[in-house]
Amino acid sequence: MTYLIDSDWVIDWLANRRAAVALLRRLSAQGICVSLITYAEVLDGVYHGQDVTRYQRDFQRFLQEAPVLPLTRLIMQRFARIRGDLRLRGAIIPDMDLLIAATALHHDLTLVTRNVRHFERVPALKLLRP
Image (cartoon, rainbow, N blue to C red):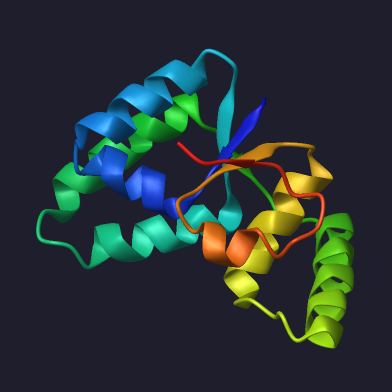
């Protein structure tokens, strides 16, 4: 796997937005995945959206191409180190974003996100800014 896909791109893929469909199709050849956090964030939208059955089906189809990476003790340790460093610099970001970043760093993945404002604060995190 090469790319960790953030929630914003998965949501756009589910909404059949042309740019998201094209990008994720292109990146899937190199391997895409999602974090357990993205899985939960997307499911929140699926369960509280207007067409639960359709979005559940479509999300399951997406997950056939993009496995879900679990949170492990090592990822949680990295999360804690990053969080502490950002707090000391006065640059803290939301914990969910930190968990996604820690997952990407742990697996040496490039994060695909539009939320650059938060993620660019995380040292050594590779970002794809389509």
